[in-house]
Image 1 (cartoon, rainbow, N blue to C red):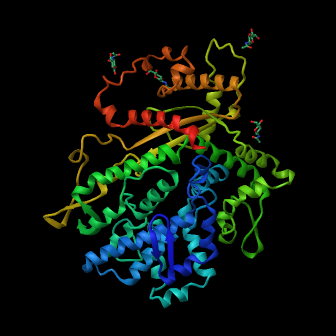
Image 2 (cartoon, rainbow, N blue to C red; image 1 turned 45 degrees about the vertical axis):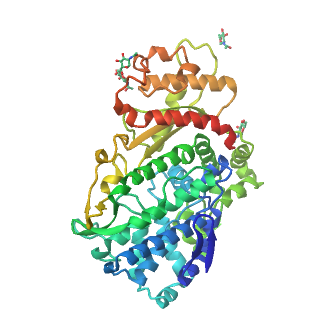
Image 3 (cartoon, rainbow, N blue to C red; image 1 turned 180 degrees about the vertical axis):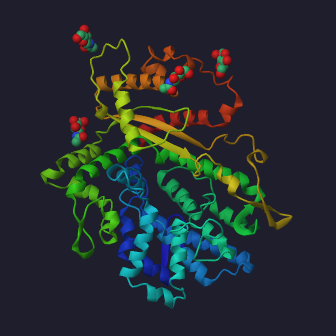
Length: 519
Ligand SMILES: *[C@@H]1O[C@H](CO)[C@@H](O)[C@H](O)[C@H]1NC(C)=O
Ligand SMILES: *[C@@H]1O[C@H](CO)[C@@H](O)[C@H](O)[C@H]1NC(C)=O
Ligand SMILES: *[C@@H]1O[C@H](CO)[C@@H](O)[C@H](O)[C@H]1NC(C)=O
Ligand SMILES: *[C@@H]1O[C@H](CO)[C@@H](O)[C@H](O)[C@H]1NC(C)=O
């Protein structure tokens, strides 16, 4: 079968892949927005997990076939290729309503003790898909060896599946160490350079209306498997290292401009609140006739198959009194009566994010009334929402490119490390930062003004960075903080410059102007 995809053009799919796509478990992804609440900000971002999954399946096949063509000595088999394509297709089967809103906000709020992530559900949903649609015989017909290949597919999605962690040696069971590079295609745990990113960069940029400066087609021309310390890894040409820095820079831009958009994020918070309030009253039938809710459906794949973005409309169009409050929140989103951002700041040190910390800080902001304040506005902890956003290059403080290896023209079999200083002096000093944002649920002018002053006072007490608009919203407060006094860009050392901290300020300023156009 041929799929006409707006990003990759005409994609040919192996019949086994089509059998996987034509199931209720896979088709469910048509009803889950790739970018969740971001669609409420960027009118083009209406694409769904379905097309992304097809794209990743296609790119996974392209990469493994490219390696096979260039390096027949790797003995990549038809079976290997099919399994890599299936892993690409199925890697996101476990996403819930509004994608990352579900595993990043909703589940942590309703089940704070749970460490559940969508990858876990992808494995459960994959097993369910294979079983419900009796695909094992079909897989065997097409040459797969079961159960080894099912294990291999799952390991590519979620990493080694050992319940008892092996201390030494090769942790995977589906393929031997000679084929280690196959585990670096769909979800590369070593450095995050994988086909999942290539598809979402291209697809998200296309739908957001943002330029993508990473060209995976070029990357495909230079990939090679080389031996590094006795293990086979996917490597690229030395001269491509700059493009990889650009790739992570692009990823960071997408987070700043779109994925972590102030308004998009607060809409996801409001949807999460609505789902939280509706949770006990939404009934989804699962296996054996048992009933589940939004938050418990993750434990039963039959119920989870029926849980998509549609719960939003289910609540919005409901009439029962039990759902009244949840419904009103969604009506408020529809009419754009949104919580408003009070300000954004950064901490000196990394802070651990937890539900308690967020609630505690909301209370602190409410209590940070500046002295000598003449306004008689009373602010409650429940009026505030605090977000702590981790922005990084996918590996916490680490530079992912340190885990990439490169070959040069003289000897394509030798792979080596290239350090950042060998590339350019204009690259980041740090690879992770956190943004702290505070929103207020009451949006009348007097409350907002008071809330903003509280926020500035709280930043001062906490030694956080001066809010960008601090001197405008609280000119009587900011001069009181000595460490906020010098505000000189030009005389700062170049370390600060190369962190991109100023770049963020500049881009964010541009965003502010553009924002009114976006929705
Ligand atoms: C909906 O918005 C109105 C006006 O901003 C507000 O008074 C009301 O409390 C909101 N409803 C909910 C359930 O948050
Ligand atoms: C706040 O209350 C005090 C005393 O109750 C009053 O003098 C002052 O004018 C009030 N301020 C505003 C802005 O209403
Ligand atoms: C803020 O910095 C000052 C001076 O360096 C210090 O005395 C104070 O304890 C700090 N406050 C917090 C909350 O870390
Ligand atoms: C600029 O900041 C530095 C400290 O970062 C300070 O020593 C210097 O006096 C400041 N210069 C001006 C002109 O404010």
